[in-house]
Amino acid sequence: MKMGSFSQINNNVYKFLVAGFPHNEIIVDDIKKYKIKFVYYIINLYYFVTEYGIDILSGKKNWKDSLAWFFTTSYISLHLNRLIREKHKNKKYLFTFQTQSLFNGKLEGIPHFVYTDHTTQTNKLYPDIDPGQYMKSVRFIKKVEEKIYEDATMIFTFGSLITWSLINHYKIPETKVVTAFAGSNVLIDSEKNTEKYAKKNILFVGVEWERKGGPILLKVFEKILSKHPDAGLTIVGCSPQIHLPNCTVVGKIPVEEVAQYYNNASVFCLPTLREPFGIVFTEAMKYRLPIIANNIGSIPDLVENDYNGYLINNDPQEYAEAICKLFENPEKCKQMGENGFNLSESKFSWQLVGEKIKKNIDEFVFQLNEKEKKLINTNEHKN
Image (cartoon, rainbow, N blue to C red):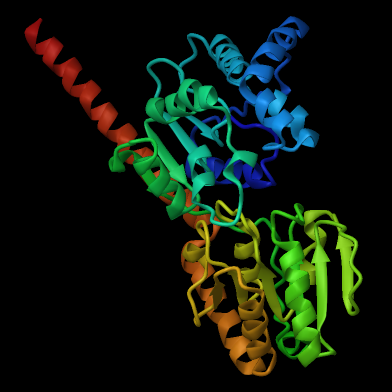
């Protein structure tokens, strides 16, 4: 069960489920395609105003995001849960599997697994954002999110921060939570480009310029230009207005076209302010790029200081010094990129993610089958 593409992630989830369970039929249910009657939207207006109205009017939440919050009420989610149960009523599945935690795909009597990249409560853990901008309503947390985690047989997370949040914020038993990580969505070219490390080209890949720390990166790049006037900055995924030299704004492009920019960059820098995991980091690692990033979220899962990059405490001067250090030592830049590639091969591939998830599902389903066999044998013995 999914909601849309989930940034291309659901395609990879489908592939590893098919590979992991070749003798089973995988039925895909896209909740985003469910038809909701107009009357329910009218009723939802009350919940939208109740749950998010004050925050939007007071400026805690951006009014431009009102439509998104309209579809993130507890009422809409609970209605979707009812539709899911009605659609799959009395059907026998080996297990159900959902991505994200915006709805509850649990069906009665069937093991249910959740794979998610975030929790609402983790928004409180980012030092440089106002969590109120991103927090779902208290009612959503109580009526929807907590129930999703409570009902799940097991929860797979993208990173250790989410695992920590489930255990500490939501009081989910450690035995129910597994950090499975995630893989890259970009196809990797087989040919390595070793000349790129001397080009002094910084790459930024992100759709949300502000949240991904774009304005901070411009301050960083301005400092870098004073030392390295031949340095370049390439921005992929968004189209901000920039008034600095040597900047290339590519904008939003198909995922298959992103590879060329990874393959021609020297370093990858994303001073993001809020990051549950960051698939782009796994992509940069696959292209052997050293990573300069903010020391928040699950990024420490991906970046080891002075091994495959540098973790910075959101200081433009520190960012600039770290990047200049790499510009002045292309061999170190290359070695860090190689280290990152090796790290990604050992932890961050969809094959490895799928194998870890399958192993845990298999163990549970096997234990369940053994219990059923014992129960049947016990009943036969009594008879």
